[in-house]
Amino acid sequence: MRRKIFFSVLMMVLIEASAFAEHPLITDDTGTQGKGKYQIELSSELAHAKEDDSRTDSFEFSSALSYGIADSVDIVLNIPYEHIRLKEDGQINTVHGLSDISLEIKWRFHEKDGLSFAVKPGLTFPTGDHDKGLGAGRVACSAFFIMTKEIQPWAFHLNLGYIRNENKADERKNLWHASLAGEVEVMRYLKIVGNIGMERNSDRTLDIHPAFILGGVIYSLTENIDIDFGIKGGLTKPEADYAVLAGISWRF
Image 1 (tube, helix red, strand yellow):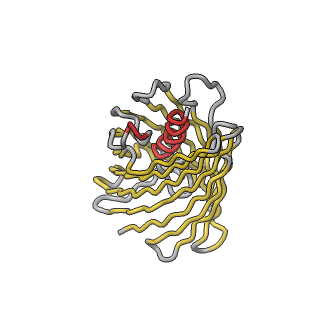
Image 2 (image 1 turned 90 degrees about the vertical axis):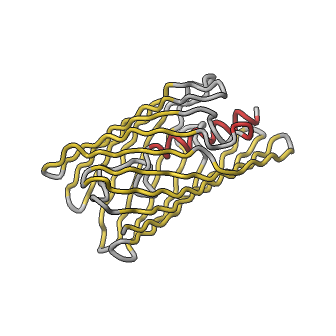
């Protein structure tokens, strides 16, 4: 039971990471760095979930490096660290360490009149310790379709994704993701963002899928450095009850 809870929490993190976005948003946009340019993004999420006599507190810290191999093509490496604490029947069990690293390529193939489309295929590698519940134990893959529509000062983003969840925990292998985000620049250097989405539950025994709603802010310290903060809430039981997100990104 504990291993299943650990793995379920991990899969929610990995699925969301597959749609890596302008933090704190889960939904990605079609923007790229530009040829020869980099972005380093450090992000964290502290989540809490409670069900009957069990309580799960999880902390994720991710470092992501994006590089523009062309003006409309980015390659993205994401390295996540997990700390999961489960309290059940009066007993506490904790696991922590590196989880599964992902590598993705984003290609924006259309852009006109504020409307743009991109695709983002990716691979997740079994770098986490499967025996501790920190990894799937097998190479997995994903593919996302991304749409962005800009109507100044607004921007809207849509993600539709498929995750081939190869794993050693008897979880569902065919998962989907759907999410929608919006952002508005309320003043120079400050954006308010919102996000809603759902993924197919990786637990074969459950037909209720994790769904979330999120709100946050992004503040630009300089033209190339952003800090962000967000609160995410669960709309269905399989999603964490709530999570606090914070991050910083640097473009150069």
